[in-house]
Length: 90
Image 1 (cartoon, rainbow, N blue to C red):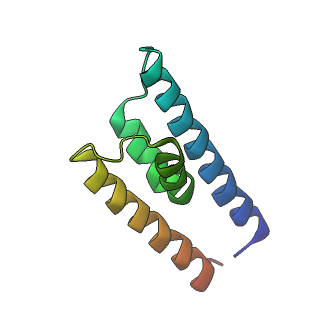
Image 2 (cartoon, rainbow, N blue to C red; image 1 turned 120 degrees about the vertical axis):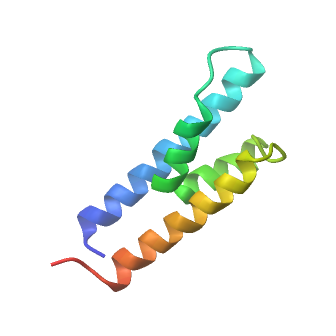
């Protein structure tokens, strides 16, 4: 994987992790929440960060169908990253 692409993947994971942590905080203080479709989109971009945040913060771990969609987004993220590693463009 190209170094620039690896950095983008890492940034995507960091953004997803932060967003899930922020949403959990907002849930605790009854603040404005991040829409689930945005969280799922972030899981597609930064699956490992999103999954890690869900587990660490115990955020949306039992909510269905969100959890099913989260698992699918995480799996898609892994497949995308593997494709970028094993089938580089150019």
